[in-house]
Amino acid sequence: MAEPEFSLGIEEEYLLVDKETGALAEQPPGLLEACQQKLGEQVSPEYMRCQIEIGSKVCANIAEARADLQRLRACISEEAGKFGLTPIAVSCHPAADWKQQHHTDKERYNQLHDDLGGVVRRLLICGMHVHVGLGSDALRADLLGQMSYFLPHLLAMSTSSPFWQGEDTGLASYRLTVFDNLPRTGLPPRLHSWDEYQRSVQILVDIGVIEDATKIWWDLRPSDKFPTLESRICDVQPRLEHTLALAALTQCIIRMLWRLRRNNQRWRRYDNFLIAENRWRAQRYGVAGGLVDFGRGEIVPVAALLEELLEMTAEDADALGCVTEVEGARRIVEGGTSADRQRAVYAEAKKHGADHEGRMQAMVRHLIEEFHADL
Image (cartoon, rainbow, N blue to C red; front, side):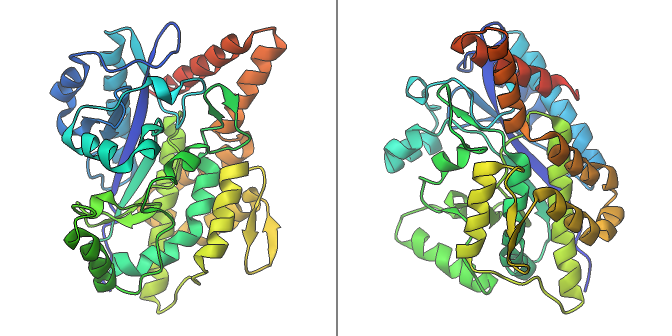
């Protein structure tokens, strides 16, 4: 069996905030154009006017992805700075009110606004998408169901949205509670072949519900534009190093599953009912609450599950040249996710007498610092 390229593509969505106040800011005239002049099609608008999206080139390895994302983040920061703004990479702004935001005046987004009603108006959230190149449609369909098992693990380590409209939600990823209100979201269904996937999509296209598969927003999907599996489960990461760790781990898991297939083996497929329980635990607790190991029949700490995963994918990390980045996942688990760090900043500001507004501003300053830490 010919080995796929396992190429990487990474998309990130950022929020634009005022440098001084930390408040959300709509894109000023000229910002997107200035960014596109330098970055071309690698930068684009997002649903809300206060958002901006970047996409890496097709990268052969994680080193190329690192260089490209550093360049993209630095350029967005530089151009936004000319308008007194700065980007932050967080899935929910700690204090912003979605009712005060407006969607981008673009045909696709206007259509979403009309089609989806009130649920899309709350879409003040940012995500991170990781594409892994597989080439074969049959391979993409086969690995789709097996890869679903690991989505809660990736979500747990990525959580960056504990606050919503100035309140601690008690969740590590509030983003998903907003996104899951949209249709065609959540875990991918159990599909047995590429033909079955295409037939299912075509039914919705033929009756005019969707134009194409880009309006299927599962946590993991076959990309409609590229020969990839696209993981969409993760909250966006304030730290570039954490983006790279999660992207490399995603790449390694998919290669490990391909390796099993090459040897006429498979990862056991569990019902979505069970995987969804782990998805909820990751959404609620991040790395703090543990996930269910269905083989053992018990809840196991995320740190222990990660060590098992790193051992299973060690051969793949070595082959893909991403050992250093994958091991960065340990630092996420040991030090806590962005959700944990945001809560720590809030508690520290409160300890020093800051009022509620001051605590919110302290968190945004922290997020600004983290965005620029690895540039």
